[in-house]
Length: 247
Image (cartoon, rainbow, N blue to C red; front, side, top):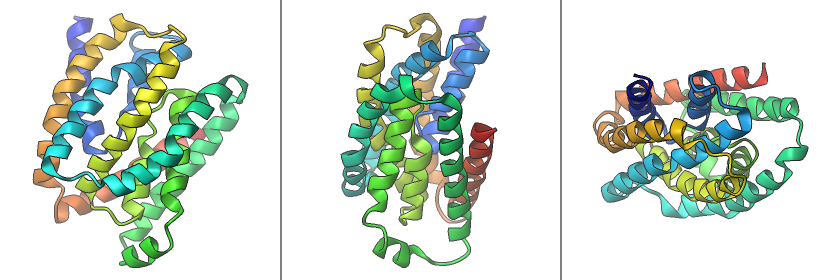
């Protein structure tokens, strides 16, 4: 019964996180700790490792649609990959409370920025002033993956939207960046041997199916009014995630 429930949960997680351009690290962590009662370290390792197949599926389908901005994605990876490694190495020495406050504040500010951007056409201005922004967003995301086993999708997705990407391009490019980071993060966490495969396997099955569906849904709905709604939803979600992380 629990196995079937986790497959269903994984299905919805896969659809949601690939549509929103994230690996679902925070959602995976919540399910693994609440349902399976895993210790934080084990939940973090299990989350990042078992989310990889779903990310790969979503990324491949976005690639076939031609939606990935490799130039912007690779620029983010220049700073993201080293940050993953650094984050994993310094994780034992970072105060959990301090980390939560910093990440929560970043997510909150990014959410506000996305909503503010919808009030006016600041795309050109943002792109002209943003040569360093992809590196900054990549670094933040990499630290989230390395330190806590989170997907790091929030800063990447928000950064891409702020830089002027459409909703579907942001989701696609974010998936590409995250799978590269997650591979590095998974290697770092696998070395600790704390992955709970019995808990993660059922989530992984459902998430793969959900990830296969998400790019098709985004291609159909992430245009016009649908894109505006998704941007508003993404901004509000980041604000709420930021507040929850800080408190």
